[in-house]
Length: 115
Image (cartoon, rainbow, N blue to C red; front, side, top):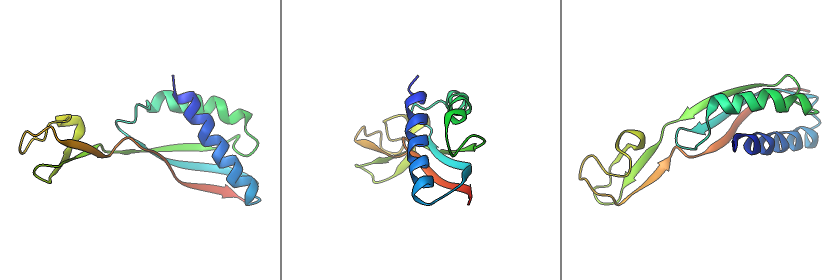
């Protein structure tokens, strides 16, 4: 379960930001998680609920997950397509010369705080 490591990394980053900005508490975090990032949202949220109890700045922090659709680009025909529907084969020209544009990221989009 790599969600544990990701949760700890995010909490570490957020606590650093809170400390540097004299924030009393982080109340909400919006995360962008790509649909092919290998992060399972339900596992992530379970770990999140457990891990924030140990945090100085995030004991009651809500986590909202925004899913980012996986989109690939075809180098042959220059079209984009849904990765989860067509995998690595372009549905327009059937080329396999494609690459992922979005959908594997894990980003902190924004936070809400008490000062």
